[in-house]
Length: 487
Image 1 (cartoon, rainbow, N blue to C red):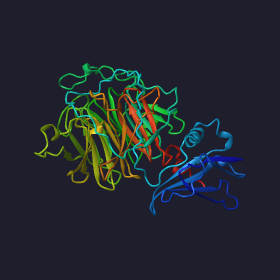
Image 2: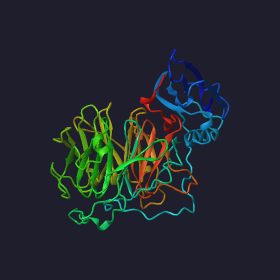
Image 3: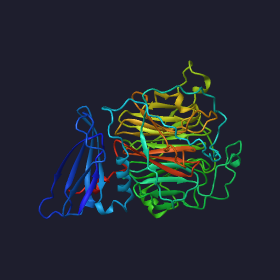
Image 4: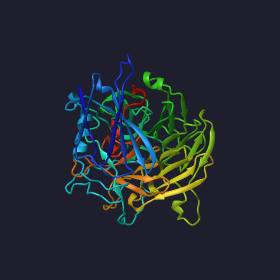
């Protein structure tokens, strides 16, 4: 039995194998090193290296190491399947198709050439925009200047998820420590302008969403593995996974935040382990929220942050038991315009734990604000005209020290809806990405974003689906789960 691997045309490759000891039932391990620190000796375009052996090669593991200079910046693992699976397994088929389509030469280094394509067909039909809360603050922004030295960053996984996965408005997306993907969707309910009164109280309190709102999906196959939450939620919004496998949910109709343990999710228990906020009651004290949007959890302390929200302009920090710790508001710099001295819909949170930074997508101000996660002190602002005045969601990739962000529709037609890869330290846009040019399906209203080791998922509330992207440098969508390593 043999296994075929397509080697990228822009890599220098070294292969070595380690055989199992006598009596070992597992396969040998091949280590595949992708070195970016030097350019000579590229393999030919589409070159295939064939490896084989008497053992079950479908459990073979590859290790990928990315190098910048002399330092290894990250190490990831890939699953390799037998040659007989290539035509029937979509994962391998997509991998080979991707590399065979790459050009035969790529510049040395990290790349500094702008490669932006028109991602919207000229005759595209745009579905009606879904209502997404308060737009009254939206402001006009000038047309963006050309951004020098911006490269295309992420590749779209066209076939993911499976065609039989049907969702309503997908408000949130998350990925857990094993790479499993969770979508938080609204089923048969759509957020309409008439759903809330001027007091922010939800009008349809007599009927919860009757379909399961939390869908757990396989990151490779795109199938739904498990679903739950029917009959409990009214207007799903944010979903977060933490280091212990807990799921955190926000419901803007209930004005509440929920924590579910893995056991509660498995058995679909009615009562979560922690509830914050009063059911259907908005407020601005420590016991109430007003349409909370997102949660971020510190894996070192268990403390968590709540973005609150559509009708409050604050971030609240809590201890693991739910006791109040700190309130964070936007910096009140007198040199800033009045509307920039406050959050206008803090919509999404991302924690960069090594830097002790909590970053906030300040949606209608079109910016990202970062604060010291311990003291709450303002640290930095990231903004760009390319955002188009709106930043809906952010996620942090600690392996690459980058933020992923998505903007949203504006009244200015020259702003394209797209994703951004941003250097956290520099605040620079490193790459821009969206759906492939010519694709029948494009971004409509990206609403949330999640990352697992370089694979990026975008919840699109207008398209009623989750989009999957992967870094062409890391091949992260082929990750082999850490707990399945075999020697």
